[in-house]
Length: 161
Length: 171
Figure 1 (cartoon, rainbow over the protein chains, first blue to last red):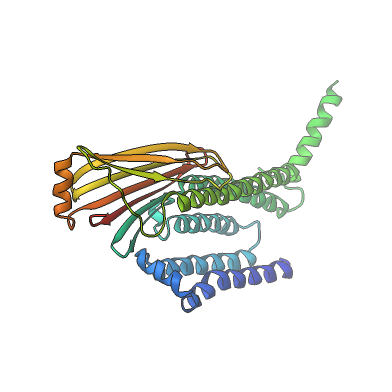
Figure 2 (cartoon, helix red, strand yellow):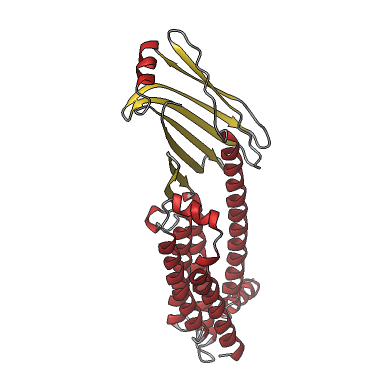
């Protein structure tokens, strides 16, 4: 296994941690007051959303790190690739559903400005379907790469099944 | 004859067992995935831009004056000037209701229009209320409320934004 692959995995995991864990953890005090007010009026659970982002960030970073230290031909590597794709699908569903993964791309929130109440429903489900398609294709791609690596790792002269 | 047939088969098997076809498949798949990602990202950005553009211009901001045309029935006209500054066509539906209380709708009117990209339009709605009901509602303005429902659909009816606003008080 090459040293550069391991280094790449460590750098990738660190970047993932910075983007999805460190920034969400430290961003709250830097949100401008008018946006904080807007979020408060919308009854959005910002801390809950940030916690979800951080959890997915930790999982993604761990998967990136583990994958970098595995042989591409190993079954665990394929499983990790599939898990990474599933994590990206969960992340997209969480973002488009504004924290509600189960809504599958339909975000519901309520605004209260003075005495006016607004109930908002934003339907972006088509993008969840697109991401599902992309994840499906990525899994097939990961399988092909793994299958090729597995054949290459076989002893010379062995005919693959 | 047999030799000429077996050469491509041999090359195919060699390519197959050397992993060449898998590499090609994976690369083709990678290219398709990248294209799908780029197209879906552009679709997301343009759809959101269209939604925000239409929503931002549909409802007037600030304090509004309602001028009822007195008579029997009383007619309350409303005019909206939405503009679609986005890159996609959007269908806008506006429903306006005047409520005597939570469950009692005095009058309602709805209009739907498809606005092409870069165009604006005018929506006219009228609430028609019998004079006696209108006067009863005005006598108890604390119970009265207005409900405005704005629904915008774009990207070939694939994405939508719906906002139901309830504004209490007698205008």
